Amino acid sequence: MPQAPERHVFVYGTLRRGGRNDINRLQPPPEYVGMGEVRGVLYHIDWYPGLTLGGEEAVTVVGEVYRITPELEAVLDEIEQIVPGADSEYFKREVDIAVQGGTVTCLVYEVNPARVKDRQVIGHGDWIVFHTS
Image (tube, rainbow, N blue to C red; front, top):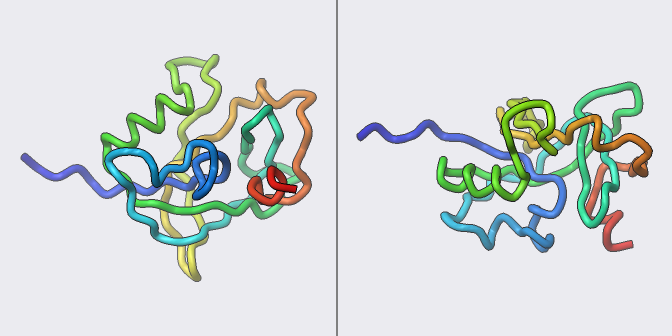
């Protein structure tokens, strides 16, 4: 049986180390690669954030990059409530993330733009700093 291709994920909110849904507590365990950055807008939705990629208001959003298995990706899809069609809370994107002087193509869970209307923009790009302040 061929091994599944290597996949990476960029986590910027509750899936970060110490967060409510800390990815390091999930199974099968991920492998930490390093801190990463992407340009986007971070929103305070409720007890969790949402990220839209790019845009005129974009700032540098920080997060963690992990190597994951297809089994863990399925767990993440469930946490992020991925469903087919335009009503999904998040959409899965493949994005180049700056990691320790290089780039890594990562899965990013981008919030559905319809879900962030009238939500608070986090003027900086660090959910952990915002959430703990």
